[in-house]
Image 1 (cartoon, helix red, strand yellow):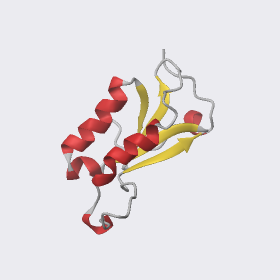
Image 2 (cartoon, rainbow, N blue to C red):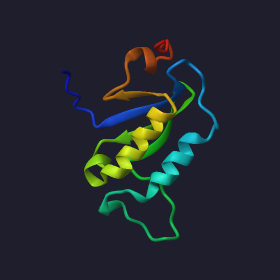
Image 3 (cartoon, rainbow, N blue to C red):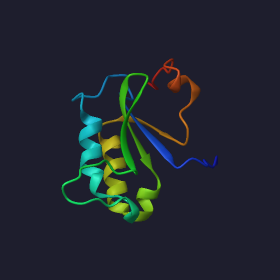
Image 4 (cartoon, rainbow, N blue to C red):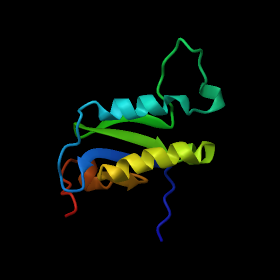
Length: 112
């Protein structure tokens, strides 16, 4: 088994069969739901909205994506299960550790 030193999990907005996941703002919605789960050092007042450092929307080759930090699992396993369940239920591509070069350079062909 390969061990990953990175604490990042990438959820890419492309399904396993290559379709673009909709709605187009899914990554911001998911990260917004997860914004309440954060380290104590990143707590803000109620009037300040910010994404959790453990679940951030991003873009990978112009594809909406989310980066989830594995520290979320240690903080709240139910929140972790929710995010990973979302990816599984919607058949989104998930990468543990760093993105493979083919994904990061935009030449990835989805699994069939």
